[in-house]
Image 1 (tube, protein in one colour):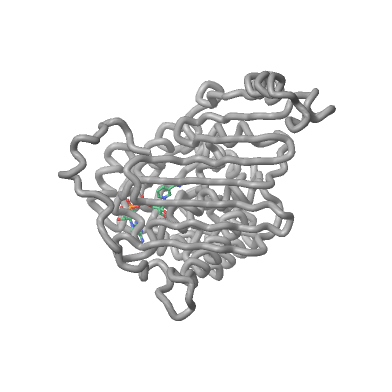
Image 2 (tube, rainbow, N blue to C red; image 1 turned 90 degrees about the vertical axis):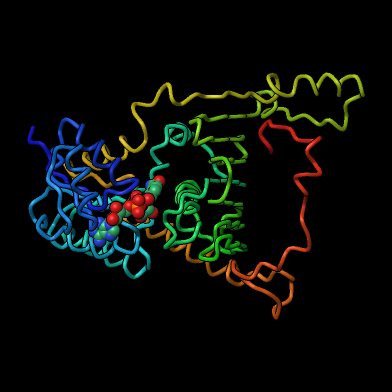
Length: 372
Ligand SMILES: NC(=O)c1ccc[n+]([C@@H]2O[C@H](COP(=O)([O-])OP(=O)(O)OC[C@H]3O[C@@H](n4cnc5c(N)ncnc54)[C@H](O)[C@@H]3O)[C@@H](O)[C@H]2O)c1
């Protein structure tokens, strides 16, 4: 089989991982890495045994596919150049800065009939994959994505940086339009919002509460779904999926605690999980075949070879961006004191009224175990 000639454009924090993985795939030849910082390109090229460049132009028409991992502001220009020359593109999330740019990329990919995949990597998380295909129609979703401050991606806020992962996942689960959005967010370090929360109400009645922070001491990435069919909880960090469903008996006959005498109510308390509500906790690391970035890249290679539609299309990337844009507009409108003339939006959180604690005075209570 001919090896597919691939280049990676932008080999910083994440792009160097794309290059490393691609350089090890047997049916791929990583021919080049590009970085506007030539020293960085040279460093990664040496590690991955390929040619470094400080601009992508010499590669146009000379590669079979490209992975674009530059800061988001450059996605449109770089992806457009490769798509125009008929080269399939994997572009990191968010697809672009503006919806017009996303539309442009989708149009060119269609006209040239080449795959355009967007790097919404959690779709390849084995715990999410293990949920797909199960009959669940979400009625309430809660997602939490907390990460430490990295100093990267400061060209965008946390909505486009982290929350967009969950927006894409939620849109892939809830096949309905978002009707109403309430959102609030706060800028901690003076730029875009670093913490954001949104409540999304879908046309089909589903509600999603979505929270993201990039100033948390510990990472946390969870998604919980409640539905008539039961409950699904995903931990993206540990890659575990918890499923709970009513027993066949409970489905068939129901059970009203109101009609039970105290003794039978006590019995029910002890039997709820196990007898009436069946639950399993799946360790999806066991069944997964590699990490999700490797699987995302392998999937892209397969789509390039076969012309198959990518799991995360340009249209999906656009839909997540459109929803993120609506959330950003909603959090700009949020009034912190409930009055329209009061402070508004992520940069105008009212000043603190006092300190929550004095570390010197609370020493005696200090517990070094993890705080909640
Ligand atoms: N899918 C995920 O989970 C995930 C995680 C992190 C970052 N990302 C996305 O990946 C992209 C890169 O993020 P990062 O954290 O690696 O950033 P980074 O700043 O660490 O790396 C970006 C690299 O691109 C280079 N660069 C800048 N402009 C360029 C250009 N025009 N041509 C070539 N190289 C250029 C920079 O020199 C730098 O080395 C962003 O779009 C980000 O949103 C996705």
